Length: 576
Image 1 (cartoon, rainbow, N blue to C red):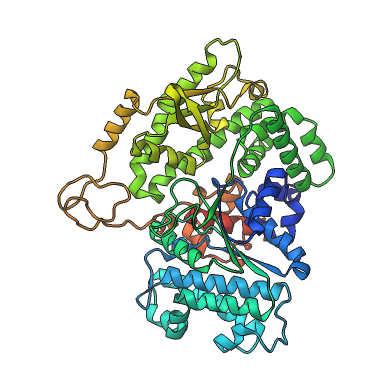
Image 2 (cartoon, one colour; image 1 turned 180 degrees about the vertical axis):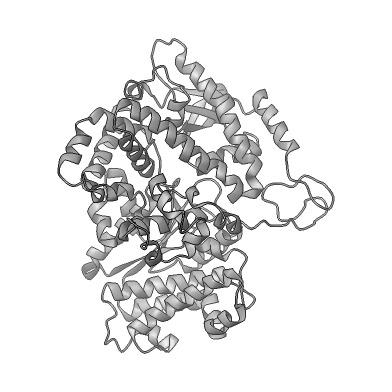
């Protein structure tokens, strides 16, 4: 077995793949096809789902399909990735918000490179609006100029030679690109110049940053760009994205939600088919593929334990295979996945979201100390139906602090929302699903053989909790004791407050990105074997973020594919 045979299985992020590989490896079922169709439409859409659920893959496949039909339909798809936006936290450029300028520059860069890539603009285009606007003579010069501007904006985050960097950026460029109406006029001019019926912007990683100010700026830009023959789509995380006061979901954008889980026979068969096709596309024909599919039941358990998340499946499957691809390997690998990836990511939100740090801890404590034991009791109790539950409900009027704690668990993928259902006293409640790998490791099911359990899990079987449950009150009382206090008057500070509600004192902001850049490289989502090779040369996350792929490839056994995976993992770590 060649090491290369497993490269595509380790490439768990869409960004790890080359552009030419996206359509080749994309696995599209009915649900995915319906989402892609909506993303091609006019208007504004938000694609919402937890990390690893497949938002980027759906964006890239949408782009590939529109590219294929471009000559006939004249619909231009422009994919824009904002994953390093966290570097611009609190950064100013000539008294302007550097993040807003950076977003404008990224939009222009992505649009220009797409026009070149799809041969709308060619080397002898005398009417190239970009060259007219920015006074650059050649296509290569224009590409290089935009790349350099973005690089310079990111350099401002280092607080080194700021005046020199600002001089190179130029006041005229900063003024123009800071003006979103100016960018909109450029886009409209492009559409008119080249007879484009529609431009579809696919904004990825835009709202994944943990900085509310950046999120609100982005959605203001998103709203201003949308209209006429300009369509805008953005990938967002569930629950805690900050849209700002002037943005309303449903009015300003239609929500497309990913992550619905169907445990019945039809849903299981659909998942099984989809993920088996994923393996088929990523593993070459030969002994390795035969060995994997010879243990089909084991492969299916990896599929089901991933709770409908493609990245979770790839990470779990890799762990199982590395441990020997046996039933015992599945038990150990699932525990490893929960202990080393699923829960640590959630716990790490305390650093990424310092204002919510107590809610991060509260949610996990409630889940593991109360909710999961109650689900376990329900499952193990003898019943006529022999159903097993992975679900619980809470009344919709639950206390705000409890809702926030559960929303954070949805953000990290430990929980997922699975619709509203009828509960006691003719009321309705939010149904939550606990990640199946976590329930399995917490021994919450009647059997330790997950292959038997999966067929018993039912959406209609759930543990109901009252929002006034006294056990929740005890946890919320503990939260109150640990709440942040105003430095001036000692009053309790709500988690999202910018000023003290009592005395009006400004709440000091903690830098997020600085702490993340100083974390060990072992915190990023790469295998321990790869981390062993990277750490001696690049011990910190920041070292990898600021390194080039060429520098990473000087490490033994780190070449094109793995250097890209490492860079993407580091950039994702600081963006969320």
